[in-house]
Image (tube, rainbow, N blue to C red; front, side, top):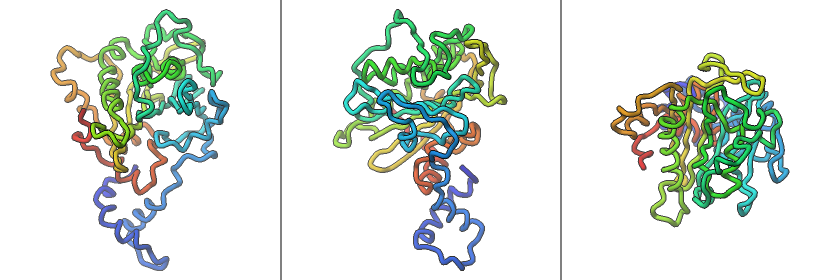
Length: 325
């Protein structure tokens, strides 16, 4: 999003803006900007964004799903992949991927926790099954089955433990389109703290008639940076160069009773001395930023399907108290 003065400007201007403007009125620069925000739908996903669409498991075009609330804005050149849980009633969307074929790495993955997708019915895919990390069957541009990451872990973006609601849902998280090369210690000992944080909140998204619910829905976007200036190194994967992200990020949007709030995390991909972490919650919140800030760092427009008036106000601030377990 844009300048910080919007944070205090918009609440003052909304009553005036909602009452309407006369086209001949003399508006200040700030009023003109706020007026544009109210009418800003140009950042929402449209078929003309330049992305390539592929068919889902139920033979629907991924284009049909670009308006879901969890989706960031698609970018030209990316392949938009949507996986559906075909063994669940209604074949809900499991997770979605904006895959950059030029980088052989996803730009982001997006998914949600709600009353349907937060159930725990299955265990993690068995380690003995081969291929353990299949090429994404919906996208031949993804790297081959079990392609080596040159000593790095195959790090899930949508974590296996994010999807325990069905066998198909969990197995799909092992597709190569959902994998990112991560340092073993980072993947197994540090990034997992952020994954668990998201899961702890996500599994508390319950139906509206449940008084114990933390939220109605939690929308999640995860990724690793692939811009050349935000790459740690490059490795050869399936005869092609793949970036090793220098940073990993998470953007979260929750809704409860039609009220929205957001938070984001920006984490450097490196070794961490986890033995000296005295408070996991404090450690996690030390890397918390606004979604606005994350957009500036990544160049990704998160939650672009929110109405402009809501997006600008929700993404400009985060309240740690709203993100307590």
